[in-house]
Image (tube, rainbow, N blue to C red):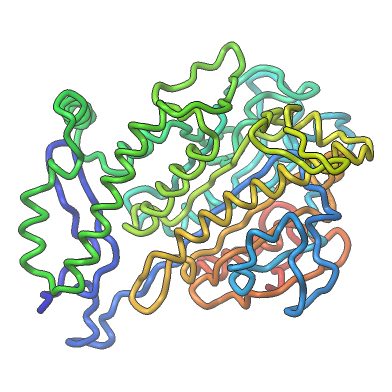
Length: 455
């Protein structure tokens, strides 16, 4: 029979700390019903570049009785766990007198609802992002207030889009008006951050020892693991074994991801790609998704930002094909190039296939979240995940009627399984006000919000 243990119990070793998933032994229901720990609600924000082909994204019917169109079809198993939100607008991504630069503004404004100062110098100015508002209210409850991950490297400076600093176009999370939170694109670095402990020299020594002797991070917490197992019932022991096995499998996948052969990111000349960056895009996304899931599962953080690419990304997808004139044609053109399709049917077929491919990656993440149990709930039940772009139609560079999904049940606070259509020019920031409420950290306003969105 399990003994009660703290939700904050950690397995420790040299330079290592492995937080635990939710176990029944952490629940005090049997002894003191009122002392049962509340299951935390998590928030995640995923970003896709260059908008979407809305004809194949937007359902024709609203409400609960709607059919998922081509781009969203991979989410069929999760239709009752998501909301498709139509009509939301990002006004601060519009020029508003500042001329061209829609890609930089789209990514910069998506989480802030603020107009970035047009500059390619050091005098950047934007505003705090929604993830950082949440982190500022609840971040003291976890090891990390927030986690910023991504796939494409960022650039802290330089001219990236019509006079806008690269800081706007390659950063998604902003701590304050002038400080972006750089995203980590190297899975190995994210793994070490999640499970590192103590002074950096101890963490470095542990990493060097693991590399030298081909050891797992779990070898450094073996004694704590044995001690904890004696306190757990059979069910919790099985759950702990499954969790630790998943960590080991993630370690192996990160180490092997260098060896795969596929299309890889080609960074700008002044950006150094970290060692260990996976060459296969899908494997890179999946590993990062798994790292996000384990961070939520072990309550290491409750807030994650995860852009699949920087806005304006011109990544090619030659391993994908689109059906054109009764033939399958490989997608060798860049994503950004194709998004300016000029109503060319062949280019539209390719852009919608890229959109669907990105949705397939979202489906993988939702599958992982749904597979993790927390008592009688799942991580997907306890999560609110926004997926979308600050551009609507990449060909037009418009910022109204954005492609936005809200996934997960937010701890039971969100009614899902709907396609909701909102009034023209309803601010995207209204959605974040609703999420703040569900997270228990309401705000009177945020960015260019006008009220709390009904979701």
